[in-house]
Amino acid sequence: MATTNNGLSEKDSVKVLVDFEVKEVLLSLKKLIKQEEAPFLVFQLDQLGINTKVRMYDMSATTYIRQVSVKSLEFKDSDGDPLCLISSSAESGAELLKVEFCKADRSGPDFCTTHKNTEQMIHVTFTSLDVMLHTEALLSAVNFLSSSLSSSSMPSAEKEVCLKTEEKMASAKSNALVSPVDSEVVDLKATMTLGAFNILVCDQTCSMADIRVKGLNSSLLIQGPQTHISARLRDIIVLDVDLKSIHKEAISIVGDEVFSFSMSLTPNATEGAGYADTSKTDGKVKLTVGCIQVVYLHKFIMSLLNFSNNFQTTKEALSTVTAQAAEKAASSVRDLAQKSFRLSMDVRVKAPLIIIPQSSTSHHALVMDLGLITVGNSFSLLSVKDCPLPAVIDNMEVLLSELKLSRTWLDSDSKKPNAELLKPVNLQLNIRRNLSATWYKKMAAVEVNGDLKPMKLELSQDDLRVMLRIVTENLGEAVGLDPCAPQQEGSLQVPATRGAPTGESEKPAGSVEGDEAVEMVKFNFNVESLQLVLYHNDPKQEAADLWHNQNLRLGELALRLMKASGKILNNGSMEVNTILTSCTLDDLRSGVDRVTSR
Image (cartoon, rainbow, N blue to C red; front, side, top):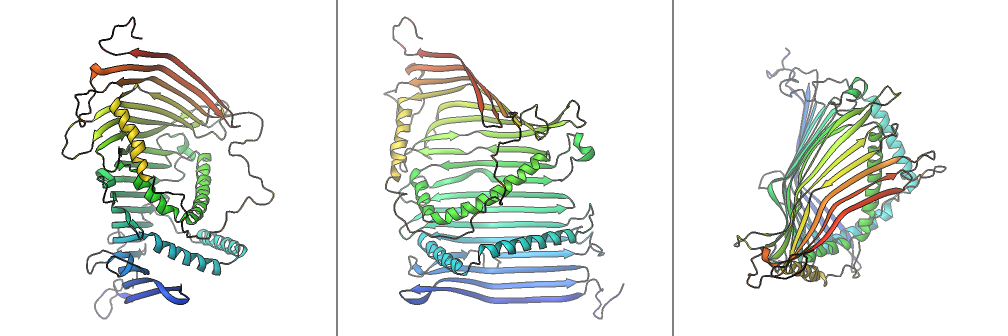
């Protein structure tokens, strides 16, 4: 093996070495204030650096930023200093943002050992960042950005030409740069770690919410035709910073994580000989969502809505962009549906726990436990007469279990049980999707069969009183927050969505050529029973005692054996049939003489 003068082997010798650091980058934005040009926003980056090494068979590069800050000179904080909108809270000497990149040559001698058969590797580390969303400061920045964009934007025709040219060049490059595929080689491995991200929502008069996100990890792995994606979020909490409210945690997590997600895509796995193999899939998704506890205070929600209403024009601009992205996503979904894309799902969602207090200062509350949602699926084949290929059917089972409604006393010192208003409810849905619906018309595109188990609701006079007071007190607390009041707005300009090309007319989503109506959705729901039991109040019962006395029952209304079935056709018409087998009303009062209780 060849060696250099300093004794290093040729493969280990550094061909190019780049190592530099910029101590400070300062950007000051100026605008006219009182007829004079003065700075109003200052961006500052401290210790921005890069380190790069190029050797014979590999290249490594590291870019980092140690500190970042954005200050508004127009507004002051409580100490009279410029308002800090963005700041890094990383430990001294640690990097706020660090990006590591490594590219290895497949023909290198250490490719299998040192680089573990990975051609490109990217690792992004983000430690901690504090952001303040200050209404007046954001409006000032948005208006400045809007005026700058409107004065320097190029005509839309030129933009379209540029976009088309870039798309063609990108297409040409993608066709030209095709590297040989090796099943053992990882083309790209990317990981990202987020330590903490804190957001404070406020204006000149008060603070509204404190949002804290911790522990986000994600990864992307591309190996030949296969793509693997995973993500995990450990914790998120939203605090109501209103000093008068006794319910501080508006959103919190009950458990170890917010969600865990993984997806694997294997294109063309079900083509050719794999079409008839129902064990093969084009993609696999696994999703686990922890229990999110939400305390609904209407005053808090309205304060956040009023904050967002200040940027109504900006929201409309973002809606335009979102609509364009949604249309592209829908087009991709339609393409996948036409190709009979098989996606295996394993979903477990611990549905949110929603707590609705009587008011921001009351311990009385309703608790909605939306239970556990599980989704699983399998694939089957359906033989088609006079056709060499069978139709592919996706059999999906959705279970909603243990949905409950109860009344509680929100006090950490109280250990008294909740009063169960709605007994645990279970719902089972069986969904059959015709993945060959583009050519097999004898089965609807979607068939849904639902079975709702018995549902029983028990209410006392106190329960109804709390519900009504939630309407008058919880919702009434937001009366002073008028979302329709005149507000200053910031605006952003985005290109309008283009219509259909000349000579092409848009067709309704459900339209098909020909006069024959085809079933798109077929459904059938069964409800075993719906029961409502009313109770008198117990005059001897304390406010924190929530249980129902069975001797104080007033009456029961019951609807039994209800069925609803129907279908939706591709021409927009719908047929529905409903059946109610039994309806009864019983007098359950004790100590009352009567001929019959029904």
